[in-house]
Image 1 (tube, rainbow, N blue to C red):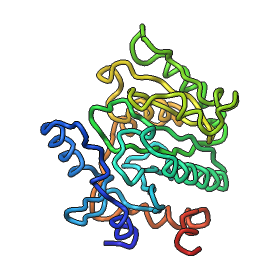
Image 2: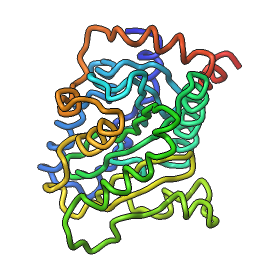
Image 3: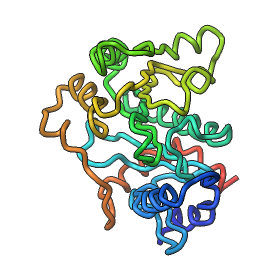
Amino acid sequence: MDDNASKLARRVHRSEIDIKNTTINELRKMNHILDNCPLCHHEETNTPPIAPIVSLATRVFMTLPTEPEISPGSATIVPIQHRTNLLECDDDEWEEIRNFMKSLTRMYHEQGRDVIFYENAAAPSRKRHASMEAVPLPYSLGETSPAFFREAILSADEEWTQHRKLIDTLAKSKQGLGRNAFRRTLAKEMPYFHVWFQLDGGLGHIVEDSNRWPKGDLFAREVIGGMLDVGPEVIKRQGRWTRGGDRRVAGFQSRWRKFDWTRVLVEG
């Protein structure tokens, strides 16, 4: 088990999962989800996540997305604790998420690229491990990405919805909510999709019917794939993490090292 994985083992406590008022069946279902989660460290067997740990903070870690990537050099930010969505994360977790967002932005900018971040939390009943995807884009597409996502969100989901289709968290951040715009505007109890165009906000959407929403990560992959002119054979293939090493890790870590804020935690 590598160094990051052994450190992660010391930071995981399944007992922190809230099981108050949980029925036996629900508890069994949750345990099954946790046992098979590719982003969880498994305490009982001291087994690290299937997804590679590229960078480890105290409450959050960074991995690489499954292949095929929509944009080369993408990253995935993950709370160590199994959260259903990022709105369940506390202040300390969010501080680390933002640190990763800031550091990734600097890294991509040095590469001459812009970046967007998104979370797909459209199916809370599946209790999947929450994560935020970081996707680098050419600067020209970074500028036009709000228009692409605005059009896609307005075209998605049911024609008649109870909630506003577009929740402009970037506007709300500029109106006074600042860095808390996302967390103060959406509710953790609702299925949602959110994309960040800047560190403090972007566009959100409440998903009325999870069954009508594109499966898995397909909504974001279709939008971004369309922007990058990626073929449908890549867009529609949503891979899985597998054990046995990831050939991309060493190259990503060498590019990331200069921007890796977690080194302060180890080196002081």
